[in-house]
Image (cartoon, rainbow, N blue to C red; front, top):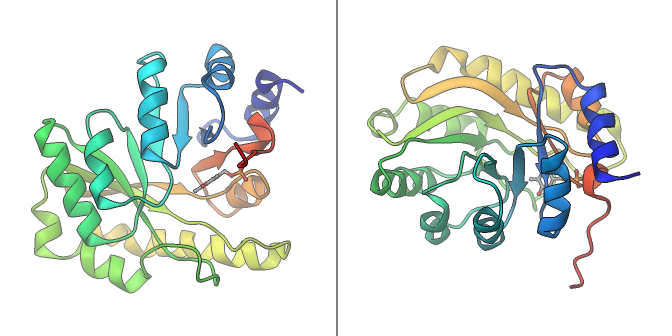
Length: 223
Ligand SMILES: *Cc1c(COP(=O)(O)O)cnc(C)c1O
């Protein structure tokens, strides 16, 4: 199946209010353009340099989402154009995003990544640390970021009951955090679900799915 057929298949399966991020990491601009030409406008990348290169080559009405683990010293390269940063996993990173956004006179939307997987390899804040941050004076004073919700990555496993538990935990955390709403925390988005589990994620309350291989085919990391 072609990229546009894959996209059609996925969009026909998901409710209108769920946002599809097309995860295009490692894929050539020609593949992204095929998705663009069939109407896709939101792309997710996990490496800053790759995202910048694609941003420069592609139409300017695209929303670029940074979905990967982000190093503080890389924020400056994308601060002028990134639409949503999914993987904010520390207060220091959020403060750096605020600082770089200020230089561009922008407010950058962010999601707090919560660690929901048992695996040590997955990044994210604990619910307690995120709770503390969202209620801190320093957070409330940041003027160039807006936290729009939470993001999580489930354990890489075939055990769907475990994945379901992890998704439910993120949804529950999102519900618990509603009461912390402020000018800087406007919780609307739960980013969870990838190619193998997006239907389950939506059933567990996801409002934004990040799908790569089901759209663009398997990734080849060797080149
Ligand atoms: C690569 C990636 C995805 C997409 O994975 P697929 O299984 O190809 O859909 C989603 N989220 C994050 C954070 C990723 O790094």
